[in-house]
Structures are given as C-alpha cells and as structure tokens.
Length: 141
Image (cartoon, rainbow, N blue to C red):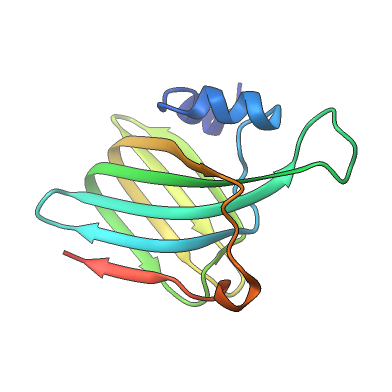
C-alpha cells in the first residue's frame, strides 16, 4: 500500500471513498471551494469538489463528491494561492508528522505538515453551476 493510501485509510471516510471510487482519491483536478486557517487552533481546512471515474464501471461513469479535508496540530505550512484547482495532492509520513504536498500548474501550490489529517465526505454530486466554478473563499481566523 502506498503511503498516500495509508494516510487516507486512517481517516473517517477514507474507506467509504475507496469503496465509492474503487481506489483512494487522487484529488487530480479537484476544485477548492473554501480554505480556512485558524492559527490559534493549529488548524487548516479545505473543502474540495472532486470528480473521477469509478473503477470497473464504463468510462462515462463519473462520481462527484465534496470532501472536507482537515489538518490539525499544524506545525508548518506554506501555500501559494492562484486559481482554485489542485493538480495533485500527495501525503506521506515524516516521523510523527503527515506531510501533504499540493501541486498545480496555476492553482494552489505548497505543503502542510501536521500531526493529524482527516477526510470526511460532505456531499455526493455537489458540483455547482458553471458560473460559480471559479469562486472560492479564504478565511483566516
């Protein structure tokens, strides 16, 4: 099992997401709806819309989900914000920390290092209308 998959497997809805897609989400081409940082609580949150093919289904069988990603006990983070698209997201353990790297050619780039990572399925089939696709919010508490 890849390190990324091991981290997903430990989350509340990682198993459910794997069951729905047939694999753990890659978050390739996911669209960020909101970003929140709370330095008093050492907390970072992303709400993302993600669409991908379902393993073992016809190529036109896509599943749309909204996932809430939460990092707690954040030790370091460095994110640069452009557009709201994620090219890829990788996770691995580094000692006691989980390092999440987010990459995109023109969207959000950077990393978050935290003691804990959580993923919760927020909605099935949540994708907004086209005119709202490029909107997202950033909150710094």
